[in-house]
Image (cartoon, rainbow, N blue to C red; front, side, top):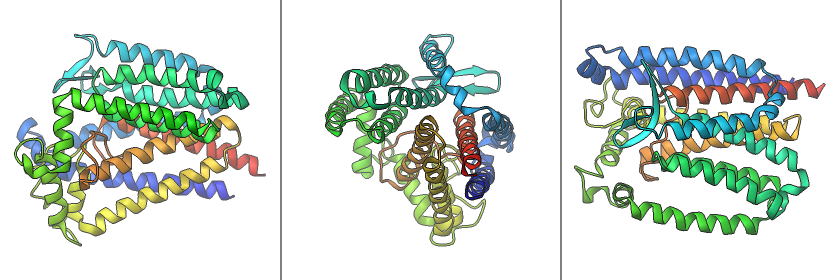
Length: 367
């Protein structure tokens, strides 16, 4: 009975976040869409199609026996590597603003790194479940897992996409830590990753500008600090109760990516502190319910699969909100269930479907 309530609450929380997203995507994008595409409903109609696709895949993820994912974990990983290689090929992958991260199919875009993230979590959960005690060793546990993670991160970095790389690295490291990997190994890896991250930042001027803008956005208010400043203006001008739904001024071509990466800022401007606090509370409830699914998972594979899924969704939410508030440098991670974004939204919904699946099996195990 307890897990049935968890499933219902998880569904209701997700649906509430999606509904907020639908309203805010239209509010934040209608004027921009009218100006660029002569259709104020352009982004809303596309997002509704993503919701339909997402729900179809969610239902499939709910009814499919998640334990059978173990049989296709390695094939899924292999497919993800192929897709990550193909997206880098000129003429196949779509390049936008210097980044080659998408496949374009008429009105739909597919980001293979989203599929790769899900495939990596499934593989890592299966790897940990298979290795049992051997996962704690260096040769049979840590090195194979980190090798797969490293190869995938290199391909994602080549797009380039540092935010997704960091997210996947943190999630897999967390899964390995919970699995019992010697913390000294992980500390060494984290130290090495920190050095590599520093090298990646200083080697690319645009990344270095993001860090400088994060530390002092007013040093370049019309350049690298523009997004952060406009985001903070939006949040600050909303006050407690907000300017009112649809009355944002920052969405009037001041705040770039208002309906994607910085939609939380528009929520703050239009709905105020009450609106942003409500969204944060909903994510806290979602994470809390996700933890219950993890703790009641019926098997080791389900435990680590749900741990990876919840951790990735939580990380994306925390980073997106933190970037909007100026707590983190700009990363380009969407706000789960709320931001406009095709493949990202669909794979977030698949993650929810798998969590509901694991909770359902855990519920049957209660009796």
